[in-house]
Length: 410
Picture (cartoon, helix red, strand yellow):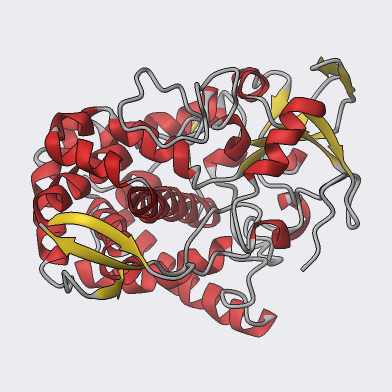
């Protein structure tokens, strides 16, 4: 597989198939931090690779739109090919693909469901889930940790938040892979198979929508089903779009941060020794886990007026793509950015986004990472990854399909 590095095509999913191309982004930050990336199937886009530019654009919702009618939050245009890039015109508009003030109103519906008072003793329940999952891990033997821990943990938490039975996590896993896997033939085997997947999900969503409308509860599904914008109830198709957003956002970041962090501890055993010697480091270390993993590679905006970024003239209507994977390794912000360091302080990463669209579940994600590695520290002396994991073929999710690891018992 040959990738042109001189003028890299950051949209090409093959660029991310075998590795996270940190060297490509390092060179762009140094030589052309605001980089014009042509497209074979579109008008092209501006790629932002510096942390400061990413944060600034994220904060300026007045100049840089996430709205569906302007193309949405992905490199492809959602208003042309749907939320998942599968021509799913029946899927409504999730609040990530809306601008203020409507975006802000949606967040106000979701935020209470994630408030400490509403969640109650959820950390204790996560502790119990982790313990139950680790009880099935064959310590001392090589095993794929993704289906044993990385995938089920956040999906079991999501099932609780949505008021679903715990065993539904396997269906949620299948659906979320399909939603984000537009460039991976393992996840999108054919248009027909994707149509069947979406049909299954619509049937599930219809039943959930009607149940939560008839009998609302304290769960997120009830809040989304019964939300009103300017006194108008949210239609079913927008409920579906927001449900996809919750499933993908609540799953992919935590799942892949867990896997990437275990790989990082395998490559940096001294850092795992530090955690085991001082578990209090886990109060802040999850921010480093997410920075180093950068599980979401990019988000997109569209310029709503002519503007300048980094000395480049951005025209109204131009696509602007913020590469979080690059911002999280920016030398201007992070000392020795390619080093995995659990003792880093005051980490202002962009792994959860920034500005108006910062992830509403970021604290919940960090808590799950903290709980998982706190328990692992009691049981595991060393992580030993064996072989190269299979990666998502994706320009959007920095995902691992498997992680074969031997956990040496403490």
